[in-house]
Amino acid sequence: MKTSAAAPARPSTAPSTRLRRFAVIGLVAPAVALAACSGESPVTADPTAPSGTTAATSTTSAPTETSASPSTTTAPSTAATDGPATDKVAYTSIKAVIKDPDLGHTITAVRLARHLKWPSGQPVGAEQFEIVGVRVTAAAGSRYSASIDPSMFSLIAADPKQTVTPTSEFTSRWNAAPLKSAKRSATTSGWVFFKINRGTTSALRLAFNRPAYAVKTTDKSIPAKTFSVVLTK
Image 1 (cartoon, one colour):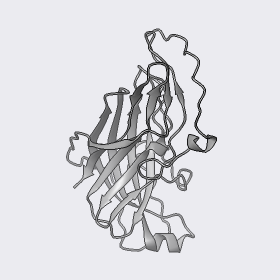
Image 2 (cartoon, helix red, strand yellow):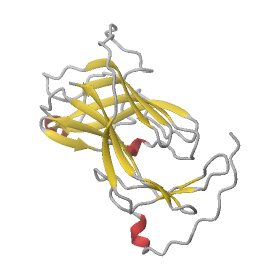
Image 3 (cartoon, helix red, strand yellow):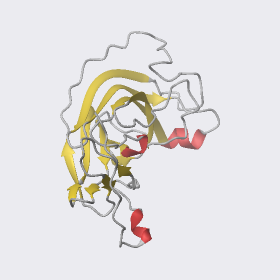
C-alpha cells in the first residue's frame, strides 16, 4: 500500500502536561503521530479522548503440552529457584484472539504459564506474588502506523479481583524471549510477564488497552478502548 506524506500536525493549544495521562488501568497513553495510507489524513494519539471497554471474541483449545521439559523457544526455563515448595509450573496451550477493527490489529495469546519459579534471592516476592507468563503473537495493522506495544497489555484476574500491568523485572531471568513492539504491518511473538497475588484463581483475561487517536485535519477520532479476551476460566 502506498503511503502518502503526512500532513503537518495542527499546533496544540492544550498545556504540555496534557500530553501524558493515565489510561484505563494506569498505563500512559503514548502521543504518537500516525501516518495513514491512500491519501488519508494523518492520525495522532489524543490523550484527552474518553475510553471504553469491549469484550473480544475468544476461542480456547485444550492443553496440548506433553513434554516434561518445554523448549525455550516456546516456554520459559524452569530452573530451580527459591519459592514455595507447593508451586508447580503449569503450561497451557491456548488460542485467545483479540481484534481491533479500527486499526486492523490482531493479537493472539497462544500459551499461558502459571506459577513460574521465582529467581533465587527474592523470598518476600515469592511469598506474596505469583509470576504469570503469556506468550503473545502481535500482528499490527497496515492502515495506520499504530504499533502494538507490550505496555498496552494487562492481565485481569477475577478472584481476588485485580488488574495487573506487565513487568520487565523477569525478562532477563529465563531463556524466554520477551514480546517486542509490532510496528505497522509487522508481526512479533514473545512473552509478557505479570505479578499477581498469590492464591489467585484460574479465571484470567488478557486485555489490550488501545489509546485514543484523532485525525487532526478532519476532526475524525478513534476513541480509546480496552479489548479483553478469556485466557482460562
